[in-house]
Amino acid sequence: MDHGPATEWKEDAKTSKIKSKIGIWMFLGYTIVYAVFIIFNVANPKLMGLDIGMVNLAIIFGFGLIVLALIMSLIYNALCGRAEEKALKLEKLEKKHSEKRHDDGGHK
Image 1 (cartoon, one colour):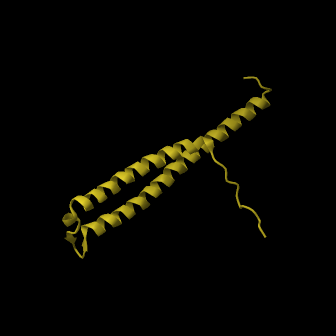
Image 2 (cartoon, rainbow, N blue to C red):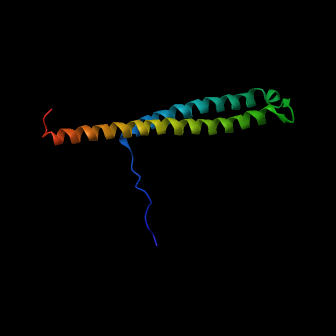
Image 3 (cartoon, rainbow, N blue to C red):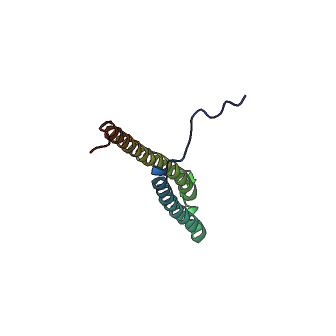
């Protein structure tokens, strides 16, 4: 009863490089923020145990990390979507230009 995939997925060589670069930079940024969280917890646990309202600073910082990850994923999706749209427009323009040259008999 296997009907196969609903859509064909293939790697897009035109955008995979920029997507990787964006992903690596965002990962490094998140890693730095997370490392600061860990360093604060290890170096000054009393600071992280400081009560702010009904919770301590460590809880607030931890939820902040989760929210940051969600925001970064939305930013990544938007940036990659723009890159894909730009590549698609360029591909359509190149195809149109190629068809026009073909219709002209290959002459410029």
